[in-house]
Length: 488
View 1 (cartoon, one colour):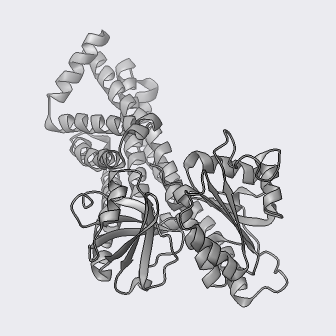
View 2: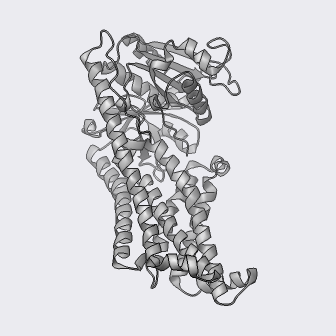
View 3: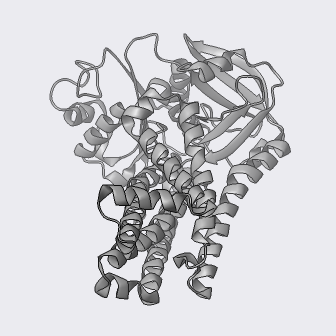
């Protein structure tokens, strides 16, 4: 998280009170987000340091420095086990989708942090198991690979807590393997999601081992209090924000399918209605996890963005049929009950501090962009001509919601450019758009004054990376580029 504070931008001539307030709220929100991010990150580091210091003061430093080979290996295993569990619990907090954390980082950045921690945690768990086994084998006079295998077998069969810990380790390894990009491409979202739910089981299965006699997790009253507080905090956050709140909100608002509209070939909009939707707290650009209570769709929830700005009376999502689950929404019947978890995401105008706005979309990524444009128009949060929309598609028949975007842009005097053409390797633009040169140079011709815009972009992940790079090279600071990637 950057510590750079955003000063209040100069007021443009003719700026209305609505625009001034929107910009002012963006400045205040950015300051709040920086403060909370610094606090959350400091707490995470302090918690990790507390675990390490407690271990060292509790005798771990003696074993590491003066113990024999077996004792040193065992000490390394004990320490890596403590650190791994601490990092795993931090990952679960990120996955719990606590509203304050979500507002600070957004789902995209929280999941990135989750993945980075996962790449550290699983190797630490394997080091923990390996060093504990080898250290114990040396202590028992067993040598070589055969001795280590015998030691492992005796451990696993020596108590239920170690057997459960072994199962927990295997679950974490499976999760790590399915998180590799190649594996994610081959797995259906529903399968990937089910596998990752076993992370909760892995934590629960490991607790009896951690509470066993002589464990570093119970070495002192302070240590026991720390870990119990952490387990309760993480478990409570998951149960509250992933289970209780979504169920209660869904019951309170009574969201049901109103009708389904085909927007283009293989693209459908689902319009939903309910009670007091203005109290749901959702903003344009955000997404919810939608679970439709009907056979074939009930068992899994999918993250889909709103494709229309929330108006307090209805909610709309627009879905491309990329799989069996998403294609099945076309058959939803009016009156189908909907369980909605969220709202989530920081892809909103809440952090906007510039008058000029550039919205860039491709493919089904147009849905949150269309909602953002509607909010800017209906709330009059931008002066005429201050919003520029670039809509990228490979072919003219791949432009869902284009007519709606065109009407909104015309209504408020904003600009829309449709960029149609086959994909060009290494470029976000079709051939010929914006002349010749780099993407940054061509974008600068398409969008005059690009460096002074607040930029929002959404589309396929690889394409978004190209856009982000081009916009940044064109002079837009990273703090003014907003994107949220829904790839899993």
